[in-house]
Image 1 (cartoon, rainbow, N blue to C red):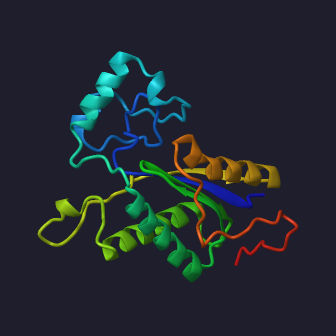
Image 2: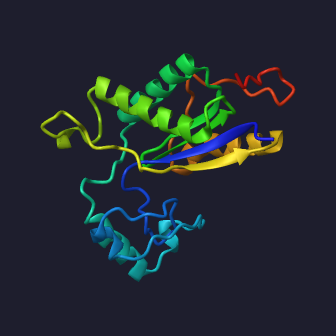
Image 3: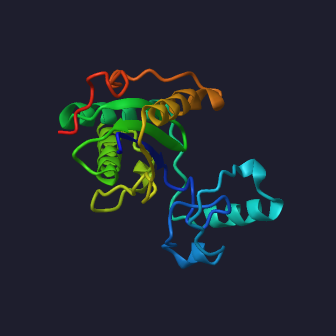
Length: 207
């Protein structure tokens, strides 16, 4: 039985549909990107350091064809993202057990809800985007169109891992909590986090 989700939200440009590291997307939206290789719908555990010089060159060439610069969140923007998550969590009754907002992507461990995981992920992205606009620090604000629409700052898709046991939940939480330190950043302490008390801890609310 699914009890929770590990949701990974990549920022725009962080992981391309045909990225040589593998991809979470099976669709290449623009031919300018498609010509750098077919879509790779694989979950390879490869980092940029594992790529060959040829693969790195191909990735850099593909990045150059993006419509907008890849999104890299600043610390201030990360705080806005967190505020958006907190507002949505309080409004919709999410139990978020762990969260790490990083420059290129965000990790969350979230309890099962009456919304589907994909819907939760999209609502979380929307809440973060609204808060960034309200705080006037959206990372792609300079590319607003004449109608006032700002380009999307998130990748279209996300990666969702279904957590079926207490051990899987605790392992996902540990991974997310420790993730900032792996990038030389302090551990994040968000006010909207719900403490995890185990599957018998009385927290389970599927609404």
